Length: 598
Image 1 (cartoon, one colour):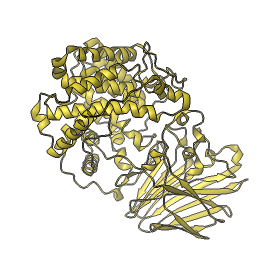
Image 2: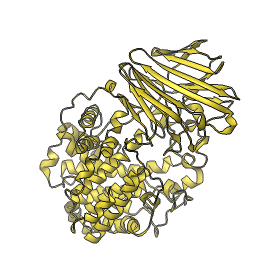
Image 3: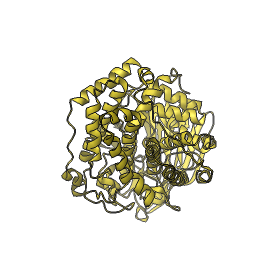
Image 4: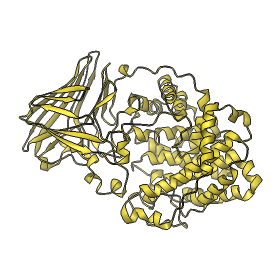
C-alpha cells in the first residue's frame, strides 16, 4: 500500500509544522481561558521544581533488579516538566519560562542514551545492556519520542531560542543527527520490518516520530527522501499484520500507539507531499482500524480489555477526533468529541508527546459541541482477525475473546468472557501489572495476570492454557440477530497434552433484554474447575452466585464453589480495580456446566 507510493514522491518534500509558532499570538490567544489558566498554572509550578537527577546507577537498576518503574519515573518527569514549560511559554508568550526550557533541552541533550534501559539492546530479544553506548545509539520508542519532543520545541520556539543563543537549536540538530537520523538510515532495527517478521505498535509509533523529527527540522532533501522511503516500507510491514477488520491484537491501550500513530504518520506525509496519500485514508482497512476504539467502548472510562490493556482507559483526545474526520467516520468523530468533552484534563497533563498536547490546545477549541455518540446498544461486531466477539443490549455488554495465544502482548485467555451490566464490571479481565523485566521475558507466564486460571476459563487439575500461536480456538461460529447474539468455539487446542483434554466447547449467548448464558461442555481425563473473576464481593449458595447489588449467576452442573480473595496492591491494577478482587472456582459436577446471568 505505502511502498508503491515511494516511487511517486515529488522532488521537493515540504516542511511539517507541528503547531503554531510562539509568535502567532492570535492562535495561542484563541485557546479557551480556562485551559490557558491550567497550562500557565502548571508551567509556573514547574518553574519551582528541581530537575530530576539521573545517575548511572539508576539506569543500571533494570538489569540489576528488573525494576523499570523507578528509572522511568525520573526519565518521564524530565520530559513532562519540559512539556509543561514549553506549553506555558506558548500560551503566555512573555519569555518567563525560556531560561528553564533551555536548561531542560540541554539536560536531555546531555543524557548518555535516550533509549529506556528495558529497550537497551541491538536485537529484538537480545540481552539488555546495563548502560547505553553513545557510540551506537539505539532507536527505541522513547529515543524517537525524545527526538520528537526536542524538534517540536525547536519548530515552535526557534526564534526565541536563537535570541538566547543559536547554539541551542544547533545542539538539538547535532544530537538528532547522531542519535536518530544517522542510525535510522544506517542500520536495521527489528521494528522497521523485514520479510514476514511480525511487527507491533513500535513500528507505527517510532515511524511517526522519526517522520515528525525529520520534517520539523530543516533537514535536506536527500535525508527527507531517504527517511520517507524507509518509513513507507515500515508502515507496510506494520499493516501486513493487521486483518482487514482493523482490530488491534495488542488491546485497546495500544490502539493509541498503533493505529493512532499510523494516523500521525499519515498526517505528516500528507502535509509534506500534498495529495499523494489521499487514497490511503479511503481504504476500508484504515477506517476499520480508526473505529476500533469506539467499538471497544463500554461506558464511561470502561473498555473491553485483553492482552496488556487496562479496563480503564484515558479519555479520547483531538487525535481520535481528527482520525475520525480523516477517514470519514462520523461515528468515531462524534464518539471522540463526546468522550473528550467529559475529560477533566483538556491539556493532557500526563502525556509526554508535545505534539499531541499542542494538537489538543489548538485543535481542541475547534471541535464541535459534543453530539451524543451513536448508542453502543446498536453495535454488535465480530473481529475475525483476532476472534473477538462483542454483543450488546440495553443492559449487558458482552465480549468473548477467541483467537490464539501467540498474539502481541498475549495473555493466555482464549475463550475468556468479559461482561458488564448497566455499564458496571460483572466478569472482568484483570489486565496487567506494572511492567518489569519479567513481563517481556521467558518467565512471562509465571505472572498470575497472564495465566488462564485468572481469566474466566477452566483449569484441569492445575493445568492451564499454553502460550503460542498453535494454542488457539477452533470451529468458531458467530451469529447476530435481533433477539439473540451467540458465539460457539472449541478451546480444546489451547491446553497442552498434560491437561488430558479430549474436548471443550464453550457457547456464549445473549438473549437480548433477558440474560446472558454460558454453556461449557467438556470431556477429559482430569477434573475441570472454571474460574470466574469479579471485582464485586460474591455471595454463594449451591446453585447461585450473587454479585453485590449488580446481579446473579444461576449455576447448573457445579460442585461446591470456592472463593479466593485477591488483594490488589499493584499501582497499575489499582487504576482499574478496587483494593480486593475475587476469583470464584466453580468445579464441574459432570460434563456440562451452565451459567445463566441476570
